[in-house]
Image 1 (cartoon, rainbow, N blue to C red):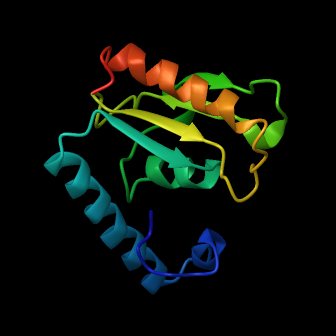
Image 2: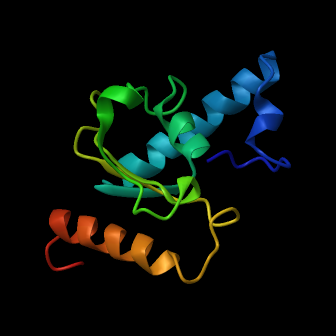
Length: 129
């Protein structure tokens, strides 16, 4: 989400003017990419990335009101998936949050996540193209 390299997203948690500008510039880049490509689907990994996307600096929508479905897949807390339709701004966009694979890397569990995502995408784009 943020094209400036840090150890992790928490490096930007402090409220400094520089941090604010980096979030605003990053949000501008993401919005332009979505608009340029007329994106209908966006796949992100991890809960922090989804929260960042919902923030005022990025797509500015209410995350709680926008979550349409949360799937735990009965694989544990690290393997949660979400389907999100922004409640304002980018209403034609569907965001899928999949597990962050650095934490959720069990090869035996990932096929269920993949199957869930593929099924959801086929509901939006029936022929998969």
